Image 1: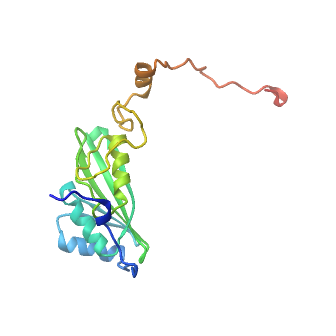
Image 2: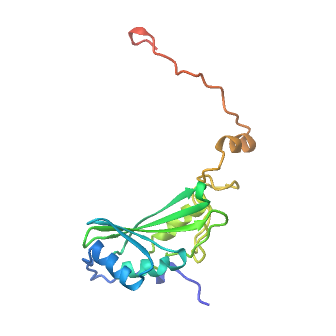
Image 3: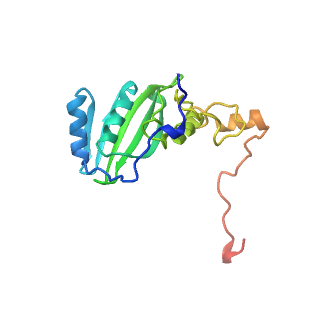
Length: 192
């Protein structure tokens, strides 16, 4: 099996012209082809699609074909009370100036979903950051190496149950210093 390289993904011709499909038209197209999805028009320029992670690639591919070809962001939400991780793929159309959110959820324990970098090349960096900060694995992403937290061996620090203070005490011997209950008040006359 041929290994993916970055040079063979997400290429555009020099004659690229952005599509003008509106958010409403794109959501209608998705709803017609995948009627079981939860599709919501939030405003004339914003829409939302809730998908199972197993078909998010198909949905993102169809949106890209409809002119939503700018991958603006990938955000991650730790929904600790629901024992879930939510991924939000933000795609944008330059032609219609529309923004669609594609949302999917994963189990909080060992979260994993296929990469979308073959659809949207910039996703490679977002996935790398989310892997490091939230522990979500993206099989197929060739760059899931350490990114920001060099030599980090702890749990993903952006999860809501990560205890920063306990980690600092255990790994660096740094204890929380006693802080006064009230901040110091400035002296009269502007003196410090």
